Length: 505
Image (tube, rainbow, N blue to C red; front, side, top):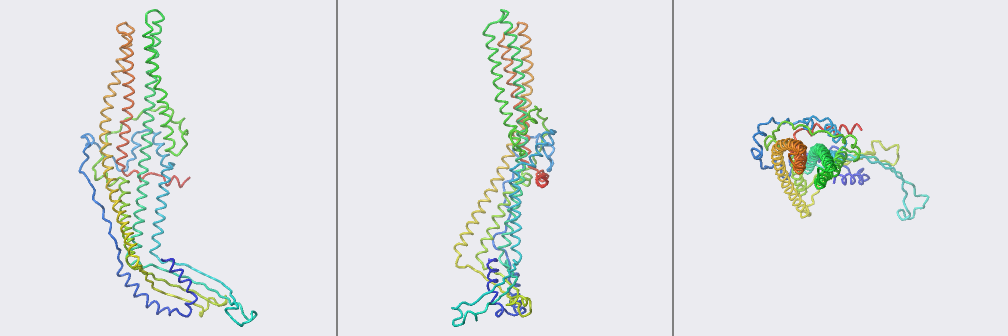
């Protein structure tokens, strides 16, 4: 509407020379109406009120050890607590170059641009226009006048016009409110994605180290079993063994060796995933990550705090709330169409038949008008848009509540998995120590002739299973800590250098 008013002002320029009132009288007409409109200004539609959400006093699955743990600082960069410089470097690279983060950043910048645009609707729209023309009457327009007698007519016109929608019922303000909430939602989307990307890098990195440990266990056990096969084969060649023992020892060795290719493939897949998360091609980190590294020691137990603290710091919950806020404001935008729109327009310019007289005192033109637009006959469409906005707000409210429930579920799951994974880790470690000792004793007793080959092979098989299970349990323990940090989110997304690093490239 603002732009159409501007166009109308430009089109009626030629008639303003005679019809425009004096400037003083025009403003005496417009200013009382403007003052009355501004004094009566209000914003229709519902004001946003933060919704209530289920908020238990404590987490049901928090163990006494977790509750007694030192609370993690809100701005803690959790990956640094593992003391692994390779992991820290990978996280920094992912934050600087991950393409999903770049997409989220572009959406955030776009939402901010739309917010700035909507704010300009609160100000007058000013345009300038100039024309220079030459015209001649046709024979039909000047009947009986010879062609030579019909002179060319020059016209020069320069003007500046302004229109301003008086936001009496808050349509513009509600639109700005909706766009501001939308920009905040995309900012929190970016923070939530940063949390997810860092969690994915850490999880895949620790899974890679766990796979490399399982690969080492398989290869070491294969070497032990190869030595056993060599011993059995030597006894068979000396006439003191049987082909049955030799075949059984060889079968166990081949079974263990069969584990190696699958683990090697899983290692390669993890390396490829980490490379892509850091914005590189899949093969880029093979040389760097192929060198095995040990899983880090588990950090001290962490306290997830209270559900209320969690809900206040999770960016995905903040994003869902801002979307609800935006949807609520858009109800006001739709409702404002039930009421008239007031537009104040004005034009000042100069029009003359000769360019030298264009800015003379007699060539000045001006126009001031207060416009009212009220599509009261279109109320059915307006009410349909209001109903659609109401329905969208209801959907966003349900989405917000679901996001809260999922956040609480994630944290309860992470708490129980972290505590139980630590317990399993302790039992697996003891089982691995005992099975290694049993395999050693079985080998010694076999060489002494106290036991047969079956007991040696069984002890070696048990050792392989126990050590492989320990590596897997240790990996899951570390990943469970990452998952708990990820559910907590904390304040660390604000420390991430994505925007600054991209700006430097």
